[in-house]
Length: 625
Image (cartoon, rainbow, N blue to C red; front, side, top):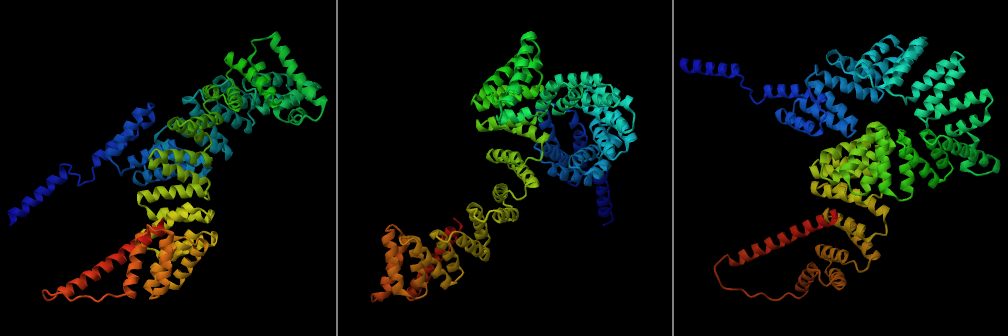
């Protein structure tokens, strides 16, 4: 016995000391975490998906798997879902810096600045991410903690020298700290990164105006106008300067482009010849400028804007095309050109224009959306998903676009992505009846009836006349044998559609099943009153009369049912049974073994029970349809 005990102790020691995992697989989960830490360095989409699949295989329920799930949800703009997944990561692995930092970015995006500060700081403790530094700097600047904000902006700028917004943010911090010289230096760094940065041009011009250097401000704004010709703030600042200089013509022109001129009203509502001729004069001036300097791209861009504001689409297209031909870098030129092409039903040309708009400025949300809509209308769903996803990264609070994505995913049988997108819709628009009904259908397919019921109920609370949601909910209740709930839904349906014979018939069936015979008879009669040749209602009422012993009424009703639908088999069987009751034939006693008559009685009882069961099943199916 001692030898056996010693052997067992040695065996357990070997198992523990040789890394036996007892089903927990710590080595594979550790490997998955290490791989997850490298995901941010992968830029090839195919490689990214392969790596994520490997992580999920190695440790499907671990922190790394939740991290992958969070990244995937971010890609389809389901930010609330991503937040929950990052939280699960940190519950299992509080030291996972990337999860903290990414969670901080999402908190910042939602305006949860206190929570964001905590998570971004945790992330930066182990990972020096410029995005984390930038987000934390923006929060600190808003909280007027300028010294720390400047530090984090500088850290971000070291690794992202091409991000003009970092230097603009740093300049604004210096301005708030009364360090205008440093602010000028940062605005200039922003322009070195992006010569078209309107904020940088406006910032420099504002400093010049504060110093009384109006001409310098004017020159700076002119440069800004060349880089961002549709920026209204630049035009309004120019209008103010020209007005002070007494140049009303240029002041009106820039007010027009800034959206605050009388000329805009005259173009949109041609009320007087004098104002309209003013707009025409600006167009003529631009034409003259183009004639003298035909390679000036900005002149064509401005001319296109003026023509478009005046409703002269053909002329606007021509001007924009000239600007595009000369390789304009203004994204809005291509966006406007695409919109005008769409108005003329030149869809292929619009697609090319929107693509060029995105090339010129990948953050042009409207171009992504319009291109996505065209792809969707042509059935190119994968390309539509790509464009809608890019749009949602820029404008996440767009439930209508989340809904389009959800429907694409549902149609392509990608249930997980569809659920994420539907939940995004409901985050921004919880009372969207369509989204609630459609996500309920997905949950029902997955067998999650509790969530399906909750969403169907929500859909019905929004639109009581949503017959699709009502029918689907009744179907679930039938399967769950929740007859009181079915009755309540059918009563509501009757109240909403009192002239619908089918609804009264279904209500009769459920009353019949619950043995509330008087209510059932009333419902069947109402259905027949609305549709006298309603064979199903007549048959059901005849059957109920038989069940309650009212044979003469049953016979009359069933004969009416047979007349309405001669092919209904059950009606014929019931009528034959009634005839047997009225005209019973004497039965011969057959000789045979003892007990044979008992057997025949038993088999008769079985057949009756079977028939009753079949009728009950048929009634349930009829109610759920």
